[in-house]
Length: 337
Image 1 (cartoon, helix red, strand yellow):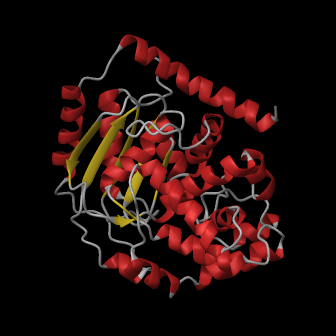
Image 2 (cartoon, rainbow, N blue to C red):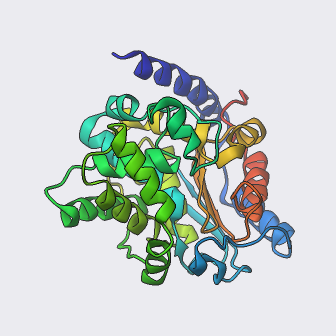
């Protein structure tokens, strides 16, 4: 067994120790969960902080008042508050689930060898970070590593690769999903920086000659439409060792979940990943479409959609609501009860 896998097993064992103690001593009632969700929803529904992302024109046009919360327990109970039907583009949250697909196809070691798993210490679309280590010290949750990860998905052609990615997302969400074409077209018209990042990763040997194809597929995956309920189920699937707790389908190999959560914990919320982990202990991933997913291993997955972002690119309402709900429900896996 590799050093990486041993480390991840040890880390998640520590996390799950808290989960096991919690499961043995306490069962979350529906009343308690609903109270936590409704309290957070009401507390932040009129919050007027942050702004929609505007470097992708279509995102600036999304309703900034959209606000929905979904919590899904490891035993498949679904709780919601607010608007959980309106869709936004999944954006960088997609990186987690493409990472899961590559791990299933090639094992977690393939990602470690190709672009690494450390936080870069730079912004998510940094070119300086690529240059510093010739693309070798990235991770799958920044753009350089994410495009390289998409480029690693196995398939005979672009259509086959895309179909495998979409099917994986659908298995996580438990329903059919589709691309928001207006977002895709807007992103594709403004993704020159990502094309440059992909070219540089190709130059350093981390993406094959189809780097522009990888960039286009990556742009398409970021444009998939999801609602808060979808994201809650996708998060809960990771909380449940890769088994969708609503559909009962094993979506990703259980052995790969510790590595997925480890990368989320270290690099999930852009430049503020450390601050987030310090405050909540939850592996999480944000997207500039306004969504955040967070995982309390063995307990629940939670997602919030609210488009206005802070300076780091993370939803303001989502961070506050998830932190409050997790605190109310004992979700921090580092807290041993």
